[in-house]
Amino acid sequence: MANKARLDRILEEMEATEALEGLQAATEKLRDAFGVDHIVYHWVDSAGDQYGCGTYQPDWVQRYLDQSYLRIDPVITGCFQRFHPVDWKRLDWSTKHARVFLADALKHGVGNQGYSIPIRGPNGQFALFTANHTCDDDAWAKFIEKFSRDLILIAHYFNRKALEFEPNRQPEQSRALSPREVDAMTLLAMGYSRAQVANTLAISEHTLRVYIESARFKLGAMNTTHAIARAMSRGLIVV
Image 1 (tube, rainbow, N blue to C red):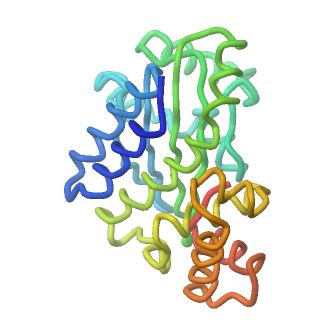
Image 2: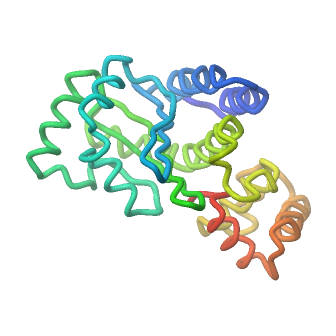
């Protein structure tokens, strides 16, 4: 199961990559680190074009495209209406199309449990970072309780790096914040106190103040709350 040192190494490798193949490798390493069936990054732009990488089987990816499942996938339609991470069990699978889609997905190796994190940018940009697994509800609830914060932070890292290879889809000023500034602002947006953020990031509160003030200056914000709002509106952080 994932540990901080292992995850840090994967993120460092991902930050250093200069090709899309590096992102594909990152999804495979993250899958193994978390001990889940699949990790997937899926992008849909405002024109409906799709882009991404992950560990789903190639035949399922091709079938998803051939069948235009994007139009009926409850994960896509459900997450598009939300800003917070979504456990797949909370989505609407009651329609006939959704049930047919789910049966097909399970047949092609998609797990019965999923946790998807919506990520938005300006101009209709939309992405999902998903952890997918096969297990019972209790085991999945424990997994999410333990790793949800890690997955949220990783989703942002992944999205930011992926956008480097998609210059036309780059959110406004998305490179303005450093990775540590992004971490700090994300945790503050999630409702953490400054002490909790410092503890989570294993830094002093003095160092945290430096990150916050730097982010506030880069965003042209009047205060921390204003900085968080601007970072969210520009797609720089996801909560």
